[in-house]
Image (cartoon, rainbow, N blue to C red):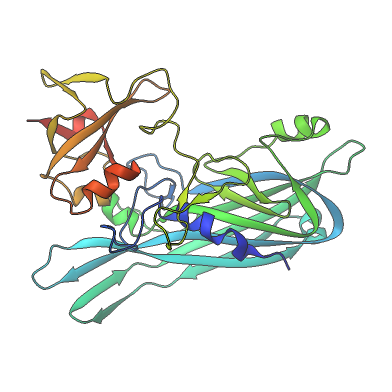
Length: 344
């Protein structure tokens, strides 16, 4: 059987967006930056998707077996006497396996309910809403002399909730959804750097909110962020496990770009803002649940970023966060739009 565990460390880095557990100033199950959020299909306030689709290529006979592990975070409300309510998240996984011959014969579907509930321990109450998840898989042998197979995997949120508040929708969503695909009896072909004969097939693959990359010849990570094939992890401290992806987001402060993130400045409410500026955080609109935990706090701007659409973003560190120095040294920041900060 394909060893899906071989990709767990990389997948965990994606799941938690590279954040370290305590005592490094981060709580592992706190909701992080939400790279891909699959909301209930009845929630339309933000036009976020309810499904993600992965298409990739494989080279193997009908006797192969596809192993799939779908992974995501399940947000739950956390309350405790004397403490501010907040959201946390628990890991969820769905493991499936299908013979390739079955997938070539037609689509296979798996429905699963992730139970909700309320539990109290040590004065802390955690409340989770149920999730309804559907996984669809199919395969198609493409025309031509090579016998290449195109595999399609869809991960869908089928929950029937129809409210309008995003914090409530998040508790019924698949957060940072991604999948691991393992293959016995065959190998995957790279979509980023396919063999020349397979390039037309690779260009025909349609991926929606998913970027499949090779972890090994028989193992693919369908990532919610763009990564290179065979992504690697770096060790941040001697003796500690490797937890940070060497691939950095293209718009991060250390990325290659024609702009100068640490020197650029923008004008917000009549004030020039750039590296070193002090701002008050006022997240709103489509801010995620984690952003709301720092509302009203003072932060320092570390960089000004521009994305491919010309939108502006500020990378900041929170002044009273005890892990700020470590975050700054590692290039880990909070990201806000100009509309989410108040210059001081």
